[in-house]
Image (cartoon, rainbow, N blue to C red; front, side, top):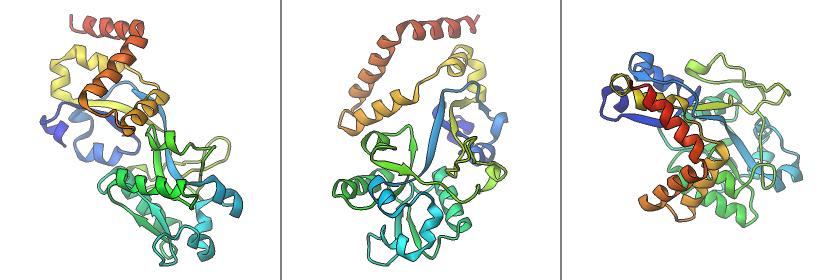
Length: 260
């Protein structure tokens, strides 16, 4: 809504289809400029530690309907599994709450929504202590650089596709038959439409820039490790540009040509 009203100019973290409801509610294509794909292959879903998954043969979140399985992930003694959700107001919150009901997990799974970074710090501490963990996350994000999917943790499948709102008709089943409950997302740069029309070079740059997922994970991990000041981040940006100078110069040249 800040971008739609012109109070902000652009965001580089518009997820499709995760943010489709928000995008539509704030005015959609009438208010926003959105061209090209900035990042592709962004995944999200539910994970548990690999040790517990293998010990109890847990592969699907529906197994948490069993109170005995759910209790393994109980952190506060109420007998229910405690799942780390996401920050209130984020697109993922609505999906997680919707799926908790759809998969009939309300009696056995308690979802915590709160400050995501703080919740994940607790989760990582538990993981390092060798305790079972159950959480939602997405890639690209530093969490998957610390608890690596496939090596330390595993993605849980879901019993069937079920999403709220604008996403309700999406089938999340993958070609190999696996279903992790969320479609693979693309990330886009979204700008205020009126601003983009006045700034064709910037608009063109937003449409053609692309960033590899692994580079974002690595940069997020550096920030998490303490290199998070404005100067640090500027250093990360400059380092990436230096390593991809030819590609970057090509983007700038193409963008400037759009201004003529």
